[in-house]
Image (tube, rainbow, N blue to C red; front, side):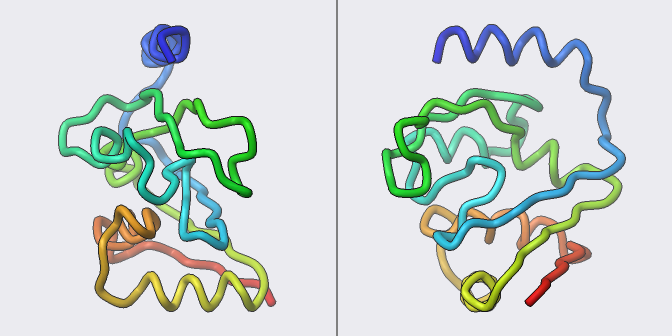
Length: 127
């Protein structure tokens, strides 16, 4: 993750905030933007004042596979975008989306963090 942190620092030089549009997907486990449930670094990514881009380590799962070290955008950076779109497809992800809309911890379903931060989130679902 040290190399990822250096790359994030370099990438910051080219990122202008606020972003115009952020398009997110969502996994069947409620993850988005490489924010995986109960990831050890998740609280840093979701913290107010977090940098735009930062490294995140996820727990290995069927979704992450061996790729547990990621770069991601912080909740603050995504929250501040002019438009945030969440794209989901299929009945399973529709059920996950509906579950995420109910009260609960963002740690267990990280997509809840952006849903809570952006009441105007534009969610697009395709069967």
